[in-house]
Image (cartoon, rainbow, N blue to C red; front, side, top):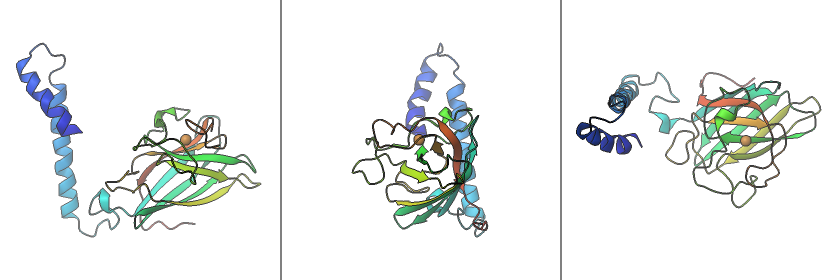
Length: 214
Ligand SMILES: [Cu+2]
């Protein structure tokens, strides 16, 4: 997106002096060049230093999201992602849920939990423009992971394997995006399953391969 969008803007800037903030686009362009240079430097100069990510995001096998409660809620937990061939296995361990209740569980578009209600994470991660659905539905968002079932202590262990995303590959990468737990269950209805408020939010990041599950 960057190079395609930026190049025409640079050309037009050189012809039009009244364009607002003419330095902004070149700065962005140089920044992205610098980031790209750093990317190549880090991926070529540290063999073996980071087995899970030394070859770049496309080779990531492990990711993790640490979920923190949103304002007024107490849900928290950890979600681990493992690339397994063409599928990603998702394993969630959560607490602070409503005892005995199902809670919607999604990957959302942005890895931004900054808003107190986590609305900053955007809507469901849906890069292919599908309708919303539960995991067994013929059409669903890539981020539709269904529901977790809380036990009588408000804890949930949930596992699901999904084939329509990758951790950092070319096909619907999830690294850097958000994970949301909702107050209500996902009933599969349009547009987002009637799942209510967001009670926990986390960002999918590169997992420490040495970190063992408790
Ligand atoms: Cu959601």
